[in-house]
Length: 358
Image (tube, rainbow, N blue to C red):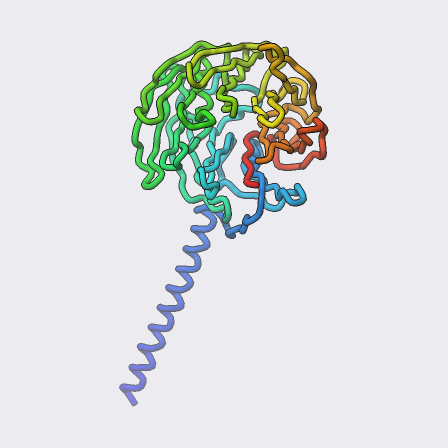
């Protein structure tokens, strides 16, 4: 009897311990879900656009089938997320967390800022796979053409840099010195060269992605924010302060054209189907499109979108365009061929960056 009582006592204690461990494990799992990233895994297994809400501190997922917001991805308490880029397989994307409001302009944001980082997010589940803590503000983070590297600019008014991380183990491979207060870093359409917009210098640093060396630094307009790739072998720089666009030839690395806009540009995107250059007019809330007529980029029309029009992205067939409107908290869907607005899609507060998986 005594032995039986001892066995029952031991069994009872073990059961209590197991229950406690199970409870602790569950609580720890819940805590990890809260502190670690997503509460519940999503299933974004459909064509979608991902929109960064700069003041909403989230990502709105637009289902392309009916162009409605289907999901909202939390960013784990991050503030002022900015531009967004897919890896080549479109299975993950990188979001720059700036901790600074860039919707009014890009001058004056540089140096050490607390809470800045880059988040790597699974494009299906919406879960954050990795956070890269940084000491200075990143304007964006972009993958190389093979997806083996992530390039991140670091804004500083004294010495701007670009950090290159290995995506297999997230070790820092290289730090490259560029100009003052760099904003966007981008790859050419064919991936052969890298471009860094040095906002304070009014220059573009051109980098060989293989040697990781700056091959040339060229002067553009004042306040360049990004050099945007085009399928015609050019890069188009939106000079925010000068209210102009500079065209760079990828092969020669020379500025081949500069044209005045008369408004503050938010973004430049080239549509190869119509051979048109689309520029978002942040001043007046519209898209202005240009044709190269006799060697000169000439405005041929405009499309009203919304207050503080910003990023422009085309569908893969280039028949539709999605434009983020930071001041209107919307994304405007446009019929490209007919230059007509189809509808406005309400998203989060101050949408800026956008990518599409169609």
